[in-house]
Amino acid sequence: MTGIAAVVTKIDRHIGNRLSLLRQRRGWSMATFARLIDMPEEHLSAMEHGELRISSALLFACASQLDVPLNYFFSGPYNFTFEEIVDDLRRGHDAVLRGMDD
Image (cartoon, rainbow, N blue to C red; front, side):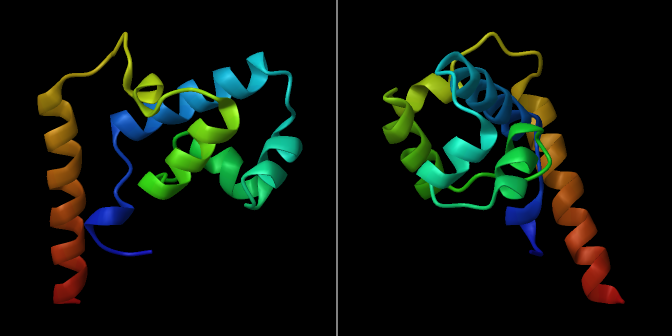
């Protein structure tokens, strides 16, 4: 995946951490939960470790399977600021533009 959508930010890592914690609290293995949301276990692992962004549709599916509202994934405490998220996105955008020059 290329482009700004592929940039992983601190909020993506936060969401992945919340997803992992809730899945474990439910007593579900990564393999079990990956089957429930119909995705490869490797992708789920990458999302939980903040290495892969999660789409809004997939986040909705996760929330539905885990029986939590979507805002669960965005609740704090946060260890980053809004400015840091914007900086992450800018760095990703700049990298995409540099790649277009090649």
